[in-house]
Length: 258
Image (cartoon, rainbow, N blue to C red; front, side):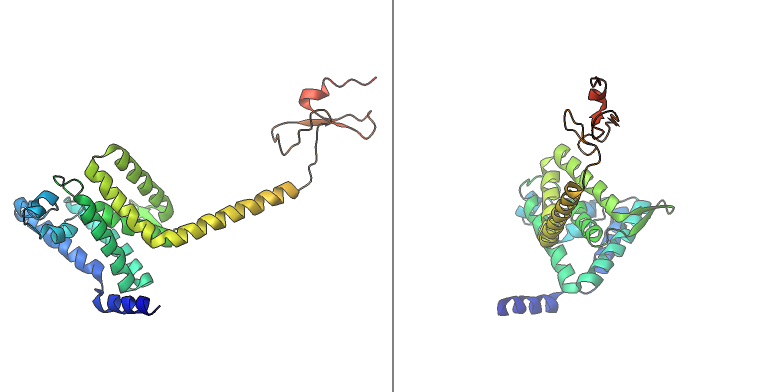
């Protein structure tokens, strides 16, 4: 307990407040450098082989590379990241938010060395913040094209599907980047995910018990099927039989009164 408290105090002292704005500022600088001389940005990408040759700064600068170099998409990316990053920091506090990004950063940088000659991107790292935001605020509305309201949980499912496709169809560098981002998310939300799974299982069990406790209204006296086991089946009653016996359509025509 004491050790945990000490770690928490160290994180509080080292945490960078408004980290989202610092990262956005770095991206804007990189965006300007790209349009002044693209070769500058090329020397700041995370290429593990170059790091092993002594270009250590690539381990730090790659987090500031913009996810898009198109001015319109760049502004959209910056706005969305500012929105979700600020919300996460306000919810968690600066230390926990810093830790979330730090875990993602370390996992991404470490995983990149599995493919030394590849170029590691930071898109999946920043994508993990979107997944975290959607997990915490599933009913938040995003307005696509500034008109169409969509709950963020549905966009998150699209993002998970995109991750799966990139993992299945992408190269090895893309695959390790996806795994690093997913690892970051799972490490932070493993308890909440497990609780939701258990809650969902219990809710389904309660519904199943409630349904099974309800009495059936129609049961075929020949084969025993009911409206619950065969909801599309129609049932008929023979008024000439003692007790007005019930028959399904498969057996009502076989039934003959004598």
